[in-house]
Length: 315
Image (tube, rainbow, N blue to C red):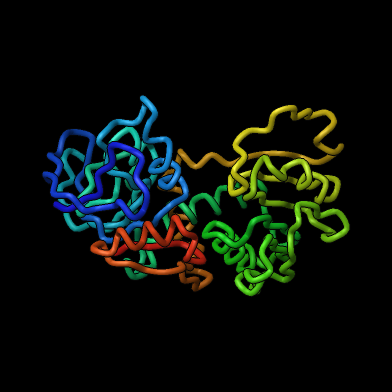
């Protein structure tokens, strides 16, 4: 089969397709014919730095998500030809991931899908919509009465979160630090420029999804009303930890801080996501779609930030 194989730091321009054996099935694992997968910031971090870490199995096929069909169910209850979605659990780091024509994945990371969406549309769902869903509902307890602030909204996760929150009936305030990207978040009730300080610019915020991360987190905590909740999910700001953070002083009285870690998807949550998409008649949003033979161009586009939204690769 054709696959992307990494063993060292690899920029988009150096991505190539290699010939590798189709994986041999073993108990507890299922073989999937990959139909589509999305590109994620996590994979960019792997390619451009994390690949050097000792805990990364090398050489490694990257990719933390995919959609496809069961080719060999091994000893599982799944059936040949069954439509599935797979994500996380070590994909593309602890074992080979989805940048390939076939993927051998542990049964625990594979979930059945009952959906008439195209493979292209399904390819935009796994990690992005799971993370949006968990952040909004498990962490923020979002309801239709909320005013939701999405900070750093011009990314795949931001667009998905806007779509879900608006379908729920929330008021949504979305931010970007680039004026030319304001039209991309026009679906929000308010689209505002973010210079790092939101005091006086937003009002009545009861829930906040911070996709910038530690760089601006303390400021986000001051942007919500008393009793509000802030969920820190993204790391777009390029700062990964907050040194000198003093919870007593930096979290305003009566404000709550949480975070969403997307490593534990379940069949129940995936069913809830697809039921919501079906009920609200939503088509998952993507930025651009590439064929697998265009994987180099897709990764270059990711590295250069050329695509506004989720990059999906179809096979």
